[in-house]
Image (cartoon, rainbow, N blue to C red; front, side):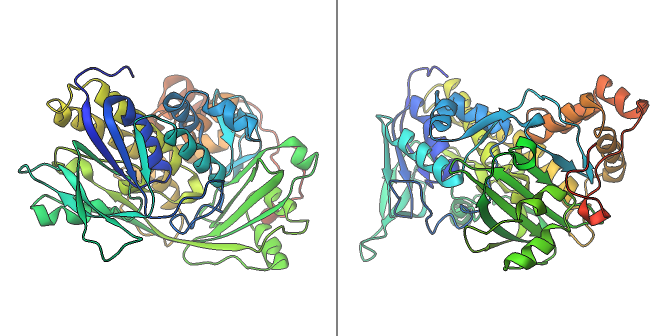
Length: 465
């Protein structure tokens, strides 16, 4: 991403979480100055803060997200491995139960990274703060968008939260990046300037979580580092377990439609045995290291930025465009892919004069990544009876084909690899229809080996395939 000249003057990134930090890293090579605004006071060490109540829960960094962060901040992967992060091909790092089927383990060319959200964010914050032209302003909020040129964003109104009596002041910028997260706060001020506000598409999920940490023991689950248990129409509960850098497992179980997992150990164990995957319940055979932490995710939201003309000088990424059911672990990776796309668009522009065209290119790319991840998330969510949302045209036929592919992937490495790469956002969902994969799905001629049954089906933990 070698920048062309002339460069932009000042870029303001609103939001200092994962998406905002990645956006700052992406635009820094193409601007004289980057200012990151964050409402919270930021811890120096890995830790939780009020603006990220979800941070203690399970977080997945998909292979595509890891690669994108590596592009933005070279050395990213090795640095986090040095801090205890675990790296490996997600195709054979542990059992993936999707659509009620356990995919056969196979290398997928999908190098993932297991690391807790607090450590990841602290690392990104330190790296971004080290960039010579980036300033992070804590305890500072955005109060509105500034438009001194008709139809364009030319800055933001900022308010220091430690002095609420002071009047908001204008921070002039060539580029304002909206990384305000799920609320999408910047778009609230569009109507004040007569700009079109993107319409929203929602899928009503009523997902409720419980997350705990338990000790990792040598030999757990045959050396697995990951367990993924996707909900099915018959078993509308999901869960995941990931190894962490501190020598623990982080385990999350989740129910749809306001079904809340229990908050005591025995109740949680019983609930986990009702998941498709038997392995997650097996990890709860030991003392909890913390109290079960709740979280609620009522609905996924997608803002249709592709359907409106966004004002020049304004870019949006991350959850401010689209927030997905977090159980799929897509959010951080989509934000990272979008940040790379933003940097590439600015690199091919021509300073302020070329910014409108550069941002149009960026938003097309950002929408592409949203399309891919949204299709995967709602395709699974809308299979759950009672989940409300707009069903894409032809979804029944697609669901039937995907269901067959999931069944074949129990024993066919070609199909399993294709499914893992789609799940990791390395390939689009349409890649499951490529001739080689399609032929394996439709032929399905290999003898089937008996798959391990989940506890919900009366199976036993550790049954062999």
